[in-house]
Image (cartoon, rainbow, N blue to C red; front, side):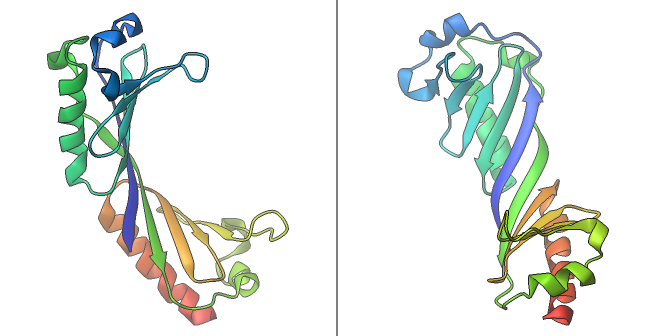
Length: 172
């Protein structure tokens, strides 16, 4: 199981004056109000989106270690236009993982095995099966590839993937 994206968010606890964005180096931000109302801050690991309200989202990270490093880099980059001492650190909101169970998965049979109320499978609309478990959600493809989303820590992603793998092997 490999983590492919971590999303964390927080609050700078102050409004951000977007008219001051040009005080930042050009290579560190992108802002086009005709396209989107948030500004993108480009980080060495991932990206951040910042809003006028002071709310921010850091995303595109591949490990929990990168959350704090990216947050500190984010504060350093925008410190010319905000007071970093007021900011609250980010909280992890979503971890997305990817796994390859390395077996062909009979999706139609899996629908019955995983209980209908927890499964969406409409092959005419989408080639994968959507399984909404208690801990998170999985997109399961007949090739054996699985995308896992909706988790707050890597341990819960791994545990969910392990349990799902066992259930699928019983069906396959």
